[in-house]
Length: 268
Length: 206
Image (cartoon, rainbow over all chains, first blue to last red; front, side, top):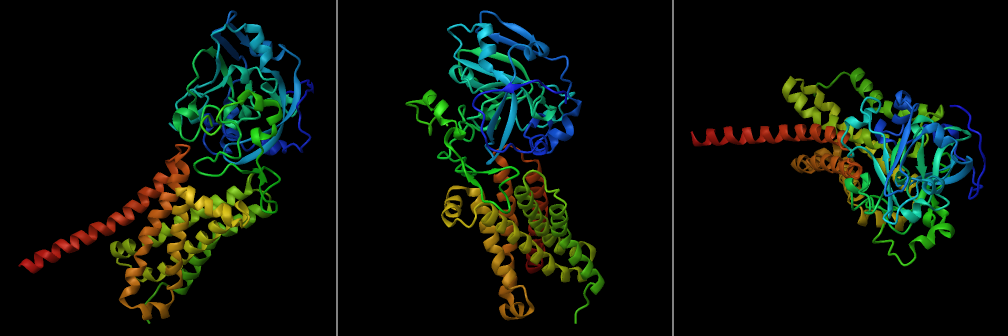
C-alpha cells in the first residue's frame, strides 16, 4: 500500500511489534468471512476510493468527510499499541492516525451526545461474508462519549507507515487499545452521535458473552474461556507459555478513572 | 482365520489415517502453520478426531448396505485413530494452552461445558481403546459389544463439544455438518433396530 507520512505519537509501547505478515494475515473481519485468513484473501475487491464518512446525529455541524479530507484533518502519528482480541490472542501494532477527539471537536457535539456509534460498510457486492448470518449487518460498534474523546482512542488510517491494508479495515477504522479488538470498528462509513447506548452487533448477537464496554479484564472470564492469559502472536506458542493479560490491556493508568465506581463485572 | 481386507488395503488405510498428522509436520517444518500455530494444530487434531469417529461409525452401515463383510476388520484401526487424534487434541490443550496448570484446567472443566463435553468424550474413549485387542474381546464376551456401544455417546459428545465451542460466535456451519453426519449414522442404527423389533413382534404373534 501507499506510504503514509507519520510522526511519532505519545503512548507507544516499546514491546516488539508483531510481524507485518501476521498483522495483515491473521484478521477477524467477518464481512469477508469467519476464518482468520479470509480477510487477507477476499478483501482485495473492496473499493476504498472514493470513500466518505458521514458524521451525524447530535452535532451542531454534521458533515460528510471525504477520505482525503480525513487524511489531511490532523497530523498523522505513529502509535504502537497492544491489541488484545477477545479470543485470547494479542499483537503489537504500529498504527497510524490521530486522536478521534480531533474529529469530534470539529463537528461540535450537542449536550445530548452521550454515545458515539460507528457503522461499518455493508455492501454485499464487495463483502462476501455478508451472505452469512453470523451477525446482523451492518456491523455496529459504539463508545461512551468520554471513551471516544480519550487521547488513546485513535481514528486510524494506516499501519506500519502505510495506508491501511484492506483486511485491516481500510480506509479508516477506530482503534481503542484498552478494549477487546472487536470494539474497534473497521471500514467506517458513518459516525453517529446519540443519546442512548448503541445496540452493538456483538452485544446483540450474544449479550451474555459480549458486553457493551468489553474492556480488557483478566478477572472477568468469557463464558467459553478464561481471559487471564493471552497468546502473543509470533511469540507465544509451542515454546513459550501464554502471558498474563493486563487490566485494561496495560492502559489502566490512562483509562481506569473513566470507570471509577463502576462494577466492571456487571458492566463487562 | 476370517477373510479380511487384503493386507495391502489395511496398510493403505493405515497410511491414509496418518496423513493428517504428516500434513501438520510438513506445514510446521515449512513454517506454514499460520500466525497462530497452536490454534491451527489444536483445531486440526480436533477436526480429525471427529472425522475418524464418523468413519468408524460408517463401517457397520457400509457393511450392511454393500454386503462387503470384510470391511468390519478396518473398524478397530479407525477407532484407534479416532482415539489417537483425540489424545493429540487433548495434549495440545493441556500442554500448549494450559502448560500443565492443573488448577486452571480444573476451573475450565467446571466452568465451561464445552471443555467438559470434550473431556468426557475423551474419557469415554479410553476404556474402548484399552479393550480393543483380541484378548479383551474374548475375555469380555458379550459385554464387549455392550461396552463398545459407548462410541455412540463419544460421537455425540464430540459434536456437542464442537457445537458449544462455535456457538459463541454463532458460527455453526461446520458443527452442523458433523451433527448431520453423526445424526444419520446413529439414526440409521435406530431405524434398523426398530424395524428388527417390528418384524420380530410380527413373527412371534404369527
